Image: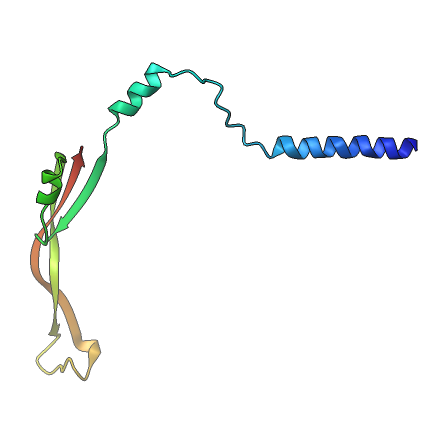
Length: 116
C-alpha cells in the first residue's frame, strides 16, 4: 500500500510539472490602462513600400487614400530585353548557342516609402 501512495504522489507531481511546463509565461498582470502604452499605439504610423518599374503604374491611388510620401529613391533599370545573332552566319531559330540577349529599353525603378 505504501508503494501505491508513493506512486500516486509521484504521478501527481508529474502531472503538475506537465501543466506548469505547458504555460508559455505570457501573463498580463498589469490590468490597468497604462497611458504610455496607449500613447504608443496611437502614435504608430502605417508604413508601405511601393516599387514602380518602367513607369508601369503610379501611386496616385495611394495618395488619394491619404498616404504621404516619406522618401523616394530612383535607379535605372532594364525594362525589356532582345535577342540578336552573335554573327552574320548565325540562325537564332536553328542554333540557340549563337543567340545573344542584350537590353532593349531602359527605364527607372522608383521605390516610394509611404506613411499614413
